[in-house]
Length: 308
Image 1 (cartoon, rainbow, N blue to C red):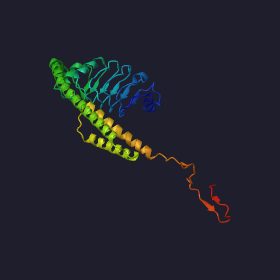
Image 2 (cartoon, rainbow, N blue to C red; image 1 turned 135 degrees about the vertical axis):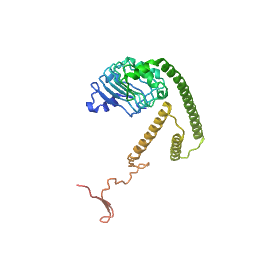
Image 3 (cartoon, rainbow, N blue to C red; image 1 turned 90 degrees about the vertical axis):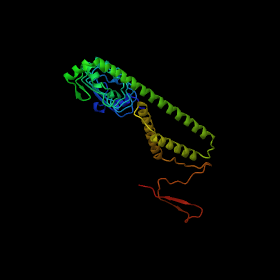
Image 4 (cartoon, one colour; image 1 turned 45 degrees about the vertical axis):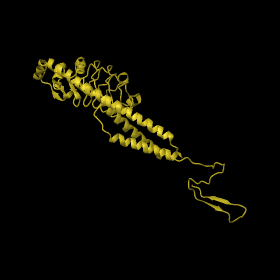
């Protein structure tokens, strides 16, 4: 997984000539980032922060961004809305296609008085019967939810049935949490099975007699290809754990491809001498030459036609 570093921040702040302290907007999307860090320390003037399409599982380390107005965390692995109280000027929050099931966590956004736009489309909590009514009643400052305007009449109705909506949200989350517990158990079981298989394969490899390094490398490559094929053929589920597993497998494949391409482009090491010390006859530059032994039988003359 990718870590947020000063180097990465500077790379993505080229539009600001690499100056990060005065940066007002930064895009760190599609970087396989799994944790938010450093941004609130070095980029306190940010107004727009784009972190969509990563592997972030927790909202954290953002409270020092007092000027931030737009935060995009779509397509991540977030399950709870939290740690945003310090974003005093936050106006728009995009959490599309995450894994938020705990809808009660939207209460933490009450402290964001300027929050006008909230997007939660594609989250499990959208399946709750009173999803929209609960949010509208909980966050009086909202003007738009899931890109639909919150009208005054809708807010009045939501407040009237708030108790019912709250109870439904609590009960719905209980059911969802049971599903998540089962999903985690399944992933843990699959991990243990894979771990056992890998240990068996290692033991089997150790018992084999490998004649040469080439055949050993070939077997390793074949095993990796089979493992990769098995991974992509097995069933996957829409869970944070599966998203991380898929990302790791993809990164592993890309790194292997990059390593293979790099090794193919390496120049072979030029050997000038044989093991016994005898010099090899080499003409790597392919300079034209001629050996002349006709004029004098006691001498061999090497004629080299050098470049100008």
